Amino acid sequence: MAAAVRARPFTATRPDSHIAIGQQRRCHQAGRGLAGLAPRAAAGDEECLAATSVSHTAQAVTSSSSTQFAQQHAAQPLADLAAAAPAAVPQADTAAAAAPLGLNPTTALLLGGAVLAGYGIKKVFDTPSRSYDQNVGQEYDAWTEEGVLEYYWGEHIHLGYYTEEERARGYKKKNFIQAKYDFIDEMFKWSGSDTPQKVLDVGCGIGGTSRFLAAKFPQASVTGITLSPNQVKRGTELAAERGLGNVKFQVMDALKMEFPDNSFDLVWACESGEHMPDKKAYVDEMVRVLKPGGTLVIATWCQREETPQTPFSESDRERLQFLYEEWAHPYFVSKEEYGRIMEGTGQLDNVATADWTAPTINSWRHSIWVGVWDPWIVVFKGPRIWYKTVREIVTLERMHRAFDDGLMEYGMMKAKKKAA
Ligand code: SAH
Image (cartoon, rainbow, N blue to C red; front, top):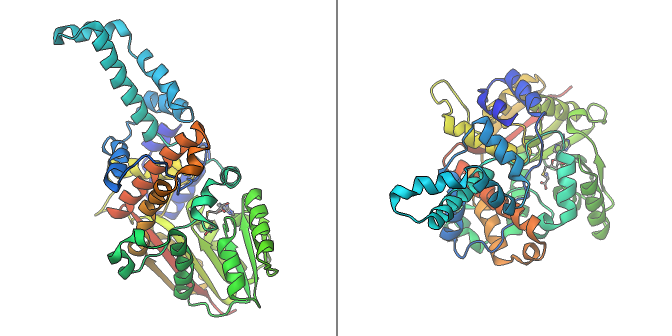
């Protein structure tokens, strides 16, 4: 199925095709990544990155048989691969092929086995393990229960903000969690909202932002929605621990919100758009519940705008496909496309977009580093989590690379709802 979808060209800039693609991808299996996990795989930045670059240099081969092979093994321990790979080529063939090279049969078999195991491992790491299939809620439930994501990222499941000066000084000198609080501060300033009374946090995670805004504006009431019951539970616990009575969390689909029209004067969406199978419905719903005069602000990972002059290459598409599918994203769109969708509602004024790749890109490698410095939670969790963690490192590095070479952008969008 993945091969069939991958083989289908998509256009990032056509709203109707987004919806169609989003619907197609519902037939996949799902999960957005648990960034921030990093075992002691690396002793230094270069080594750590060299390890992950194995899977960059060799992009996914999209033949259906190899994809199926990798999919079947993607969720299994690597030990399975060692068993599976040699079986793919009869051992006698390997020995016969090696004879002209002057290798004895045992060496030939070992070499053949090693090559096949390497090939199998590369295949597994090139093949997304958690493609989108409307189970974002279950995936976040599992991550919340595991507790590893919260351990590293704290209460915020989004990138951090690093000023130019901090970047010049070296991002590792900045506190990883502080960077996330700074992000919210910067996003709030950029939104142009002043003192909101009713705030909606769309795709609230475990509610870091909702609590932050509830504490900052004690007179306001803040509501966070998510697809994950475990996130609601954890968010509610943390709010009670902090004595915050003006924030609440609910399980609710952002594409079908139960709130009446014109309910909130700040609608905030931070890194939830990536998971939405219909970006237009996402924006339309947020605009519907926004009060006239209210502020909508969205932060989300975007792919660059594709134009006839700057089409995606085959390799761009394969890289994007991996980034969609590894962490339960149906697809991304460009910030320009978000701008068009927002303008298209006819209900918004002052629509603006910005690219915040520069202040946020350090988060990817910083996520890897926090795990290198403190790997113990992962170490004690056992082989399943080790395997997941290695996959997360590969994906974090692939994300870094995509943002670094311009395939991806950090999209910021804002607007005010027109007066009634
Ligand atoms: N904004 C949060 C979390 C971002 S993680 C933070 O800054 O910490 C993405 C969140 O989006 C998760 O909580 C996930 O459950 C939520 N999400 C994804 N699709 C959603 C949907 N259709 N409706 C509501 N929430 C959704």
